[in-house]
Length: 104
Image (tube, rainbow, N blue to C red; front, side, top):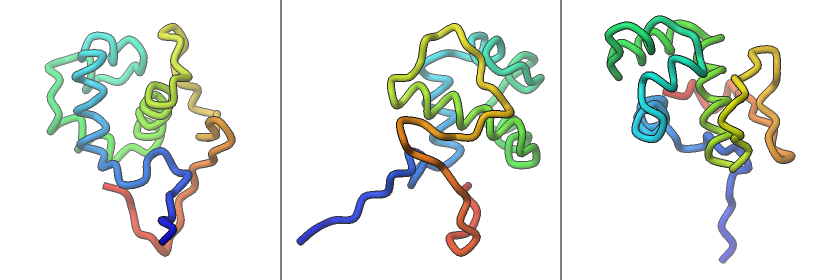
């Protein structure tokens, strides 16, 4: 039997898991340097960051871009996510399919 595998590197990854993995790997200080948002720089917590990221699409996109780059090995450690860039990584384009519902 053949299993179908999604090309979406964020498939099945909740925002909470994504953020938790980034914090465990980079730490809050490095995340605050890579993505300049207040919830990563001042009194950071997973809970407050999740609330902000769920309400702020541009910030969530930057966090998702950083995660995808890190997980796919396309991470130099010096470049910040480009908010104008689409999430195309290694011939994989991440799109939101309204029939699948929102990612959480």
